[in-house]
Amino acid sequence: MTPSPPTALVTKASLLAGLLVCGPALGAFDPGGFTIVIVSTAGNATPTNTVTPISNTLWSATGGWSTGGASVSWTNNTQGWNPATNSGFTNGNFVVRNESASAQDYSITIGMMGSAAGPLTVSGSVGGQFLNTSFGLGSLTSVGPLWEARADNNVVRSELNNALFVAQPFQVMSLGDFGFDNPFYEVSVTGSVSLRFSVRLSAGGEASFTSTFAFQAVPAPGAVALIALAGAFGRRRRRR
Image (cartoon, rainbow, N blue to C red; front, side):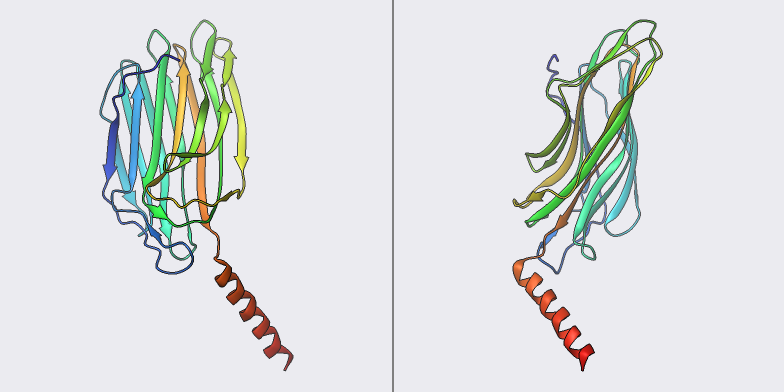
């Protein structure tokens, strides 16, 4: 994949974010909240993004970006740290199109800014399909991971590594569905959690993805002991 110029286009939405005030993972996601960065060999453009708060910790973002026959659109839900559940997530649907006459590279990073003290467990998934709208063979490729889930600058999980899909004219291909559940992540999040897509589409290519990245606080040993003690005390009272 030919590297593109390091021009990052960022949209931020000022929203209310959650503040964890109890439990083992004291953290917060700041009001800047949602970010999207798009870099493409097709050129530079400014994304448009509409953000709708759903609650104090949850918002929905819908937007698009296009230039030189290349485009990206998204509908994404993001929850900052929720004090009721000691958890947070980002998920959404992304469509990447190449209506230009040549192959184009795309790098898309979407995430939320903030912090959460470890240890955490993380889970996530990615799936999608590739449509070739051209009269010749079409391809979807990636050098390295097509999809990454990140905590700060650390890659927690990657999928579709060194992807290669070749489609006949007007063929739709499944990219598969990949998921992971609750691996232990000991390090705290100090800046952001995000999803990153890196993909090359041939002329007339269209790719759509559904993706999730979630994290959950792990109770501290003292909290676990207190829960166990409370359970034992309750059982003793019921026996009396």
